[in-house]
Image 1: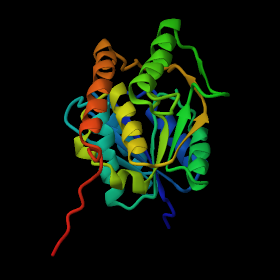
Image 2 (image 1 turned 90 degrees about the vertical axis):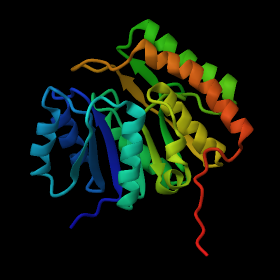
Image 3 (image 1 turned 60 degrees about the vertical axis):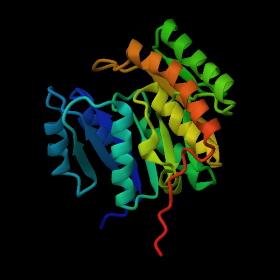
Image 4 (image 1 turned 135 degrees about the horizontal axis):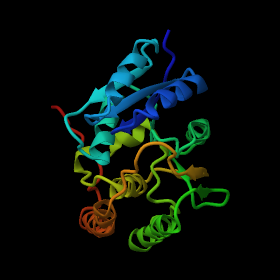
Length: 252
């Protein structure tokens, strides 16, 4: 019997070194956790490893295969829609490279069960930290969050963090098809939309560790998108206060 009410969405591209261990670890933490791997056509055989794990998982591991590297934002949006169609109550974002500690999933879940609508694994609140990152990446990440807070007034210290848990009602309210960003800016926009729609957000301190295996997906283009995207995002929401709210179709 499947008792899962939580879905962990993990986008992958060339993660053969990490994906099996990640799946095994997450499944061992709680019977409530199902996993959706959103796979962007990795040439290294990541999908084959996931499919092998699916045969051993009692229907707790799933894969959504896409043709080509289509971006982080669209991967999560596809995963959100998949989760909503299957009535999961808590939907998580997490990296596959163990930069996020899978055991912190329980802390994010607890925060939502105790009243938060979105819980954010935060590197920049008291108790949070970053390990094994070069100084330039720490500087860029930390001050990107400062920049976002200045532009948006959003009261979140780790605006670019990608380790989060949403209650179903949040994703059911956001107009997901209006989200237009792919990298850092996607993470910022999701938090901003959640905040603008009046949902409660809580940051949970985490330790973020740089990946040990595989290659980082960070690029200058992702950083540039975040810088310019925040301004566009802010202007859209000011011009149209309900920009991020899903339209309700009324019949009759």
